[in-house]
Length: 457
Ligand code: UD1
Ligand code: MG
Image (cartoon, rainbow, N blue to C red; front, side, top):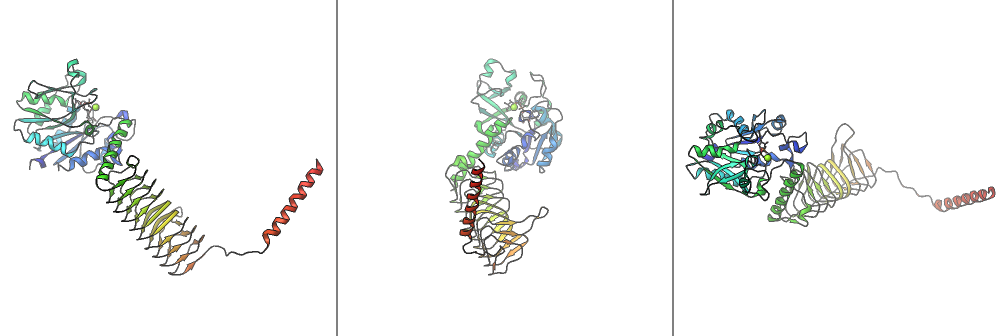
């Protein structure tokens, strides 16, 4: 199959200076995932035979972050054509067509990549496909110069363009598909005879035509081609991603009361008839099953919320929180690495960490699982149907048996038997009439002091 012979070369050797960051530009996350990984995910659905990233400065960061791809090194950035040339030694013996992508242009869909592949496949005389777009503000993009017959003749870089050429609105995205048969030969004939003294990949258009091959243009929308060079552009990309995620969630049967205030991660999974109230943030790794309500101002990360549960307002679910079917997590409750079975209620002001809680247990306001002694973490186990009174501390490791009751205000340091009551606070006693005699004594003392002070004046 021709498609399985595809080789992708992703350019990422640029300095990214405008990001002003010690993190490689293409590793800056969009919705919690490096921008280049968004691109690689779209690419992956085409099952490329090879994927090579061209790295330069801070390349070791890319190697650490992306273990499943190959790398070519471009020590000096001598232009986009030179960058692709740097990958060619790795592709010796690979006859596949060459798809050139930019690591900082992450939103190109696999559908558009497929259109480029089809354009090359469907015309035997086509040797090159260029991805173009109509720019609202063409600025310094390369311009696609077409002949009288509408065919692409060449790409002119803004720096090298005449006034008339600069007036062209059809721009070069930079993405290209090069016929595998010709790639090596054409790339080796690039020169740097231009305004920037760079090896321009765009010169391939004229080289292909001189070789008697035609060049096709596939056009796509500008927002698929957003390139990220600065923090401001990163924020624009995040906004685009969030808008798409919100729209997709609603299409899939999720109610978002105020969509623009809800933030998703790249991997957020929401079931049907989930309701997400305003100002909710999903970090990576969250799954929410059907019929769950996530109330306002809740933050979730690495958590699973089972069918019919309700979470929030103002709740925080941290990694490995597993909230059982129909369970209720209320305001100012934090849950970490804890499995709560069906129907558990943790309604107010509570910390549950490193715990398992049995079905229908009720955890009172202000309960704390004391899971950490400054060195190690310990487990708390609470049985089904147990009732933990308000303001209790459960000092782990500790087990509260099924159906047991912990009296409010207790500090529980020993296991509690099933169906028993554990109370660890001091016993209450009352002294009859004490309050009355205390007030009389204090009022008399105050009056005596006031009198003495007046006599001094
Ligand atoms: C390039 C195109 C231009 C197009 C524009 C779209 C050329 C000659 N020009 O211009 O027609 O409109 O992209 O954004 O191809 N890179 C390397 N090594 C290099 C140079 C660049 O890896 O030596 C990488 C960069 O990291 C970046 C991409 O290639 O991801 C594009 O480089 P950039 O310098 O932005 O190209 P432009 O001059 O903007
Ligand atoms: Mg650029």
